Image 1: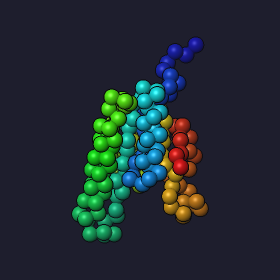
Image 2: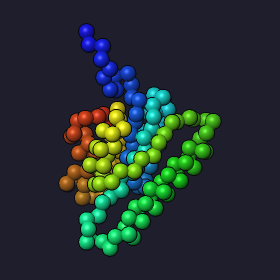
Image 3: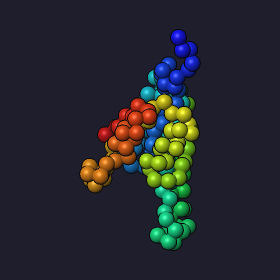
Image 4: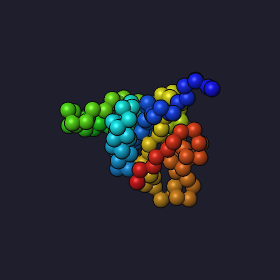
Length: 149
């Protein structure tokens, strides 16, 4: 009999939620927070800062903008957590990774040893044809993935 621990078999210890400021990602974060609370798991909120190829933009303004998005998300998350203090207690951390959304979430899930990944459904019409980050995460088959509409 194998007594070695296997990630996720005793229930999730780390639930990762991808956030980008979109309505669907904020709903995904709220859903993941509920899962984390019920499972007594750590909620890892992850924002993936896009990497803009050199020459595609003039540098600092794009980096500053994505940094401002991350700061705005942290402020919004802190305010939500403060409003719920004493009602619901959820342990959470905010992380920023760089790259395209799929690669960034994969890196985050690996580094944070996520047991489950929660993302919002894509709000872009083109993703219905090409495939969304959520579909790519599901196809990777490495974690249970919940897609929140």
